[in-house]
Length: 438
Image 1: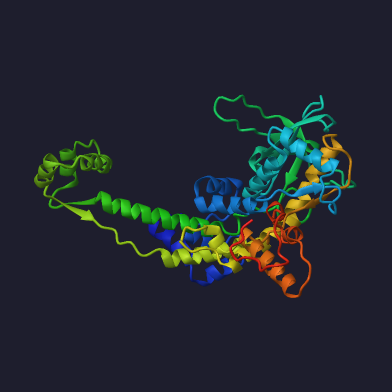
Image 2: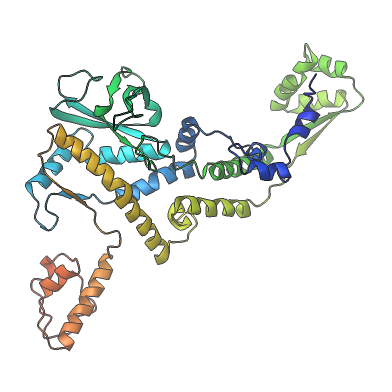
């Protein structure tokens, strides 16, 4: 018969620093994770709970999305022309008329797919067809983003000759309405959904949660916060230790009014909550001694530092960008440049292809006119207003120094400044004043 005593269970646990640890670290289920209290198999529920309840997890899901969509891209069929085309105007009109807004809906799908392996953008269209049938044409009313756990594949393409072999055909939608709203769980045809899955290199709907590589680190930070907060709270509350001297368990049980020995801790807890003169007298009669327990708290900063370094490595964003100004340390120019480079790469490699999928779908259902188009993002390395003014001054002084002709309006446009304030400025006959402000 197996020995399941507490002592044996402890002995059975792998030593985190033994050979078992090293072997476990190379397997799918590292024993070290068990020893450290981390779940071995991660599910969407783990990620969603962290996203909902842990600030750093929520921030890591949201921050790259906010950076990506901090500027709206230009969706145009003539990127060489600064003037808005009819197609570009049609996209902007659709953005205004959709309930959710075009860009707001895409941003919502982007944020949701970072939490899980994928998200889905439902095209709500008045095509007069049931939701489980292939999408038709008609007026697009809304684009609704959903989390992974709200879209469950229930039927797959099993035709080995199909280009979509292995892909879901039908999904079960769980809208999870707020309290008081009517609920439904319809079956949705895949053509009515635009699936978002960052990290899916094989063309399937299954990407990778951004929280998976750093989940252990997030939980470690949560433990540091919980342990520290609980320790300070217990010290402030004054946790009590009561020692009974010379009394049998039966006497303690009788004096506390407990029916069984198992009720003693509960009865004692109730009594401690109302500590006063009467309770002190009772303790004296029971030959009990009461002491306040103080918890010694170590400085968590060295442990937290390792976590923040790991989060920066796992997200490819500098720590100062992830944490904002919480530490009082502003992000350096190099940190800002690194963040801009990461965001630009994310725009080009993920956001742009997803926008193209959305626009192609809207063209196919008749919500936008048929046209080739480009997705053009503003530069993440755009200089600040003061930087543009400095460039204007340098150009103006340089032109004047060599005796060339310069037009203030043209120079302002060249560096990206609004030209209206420069229309009356003459920069050929005099130095550009250092105090110039458009």
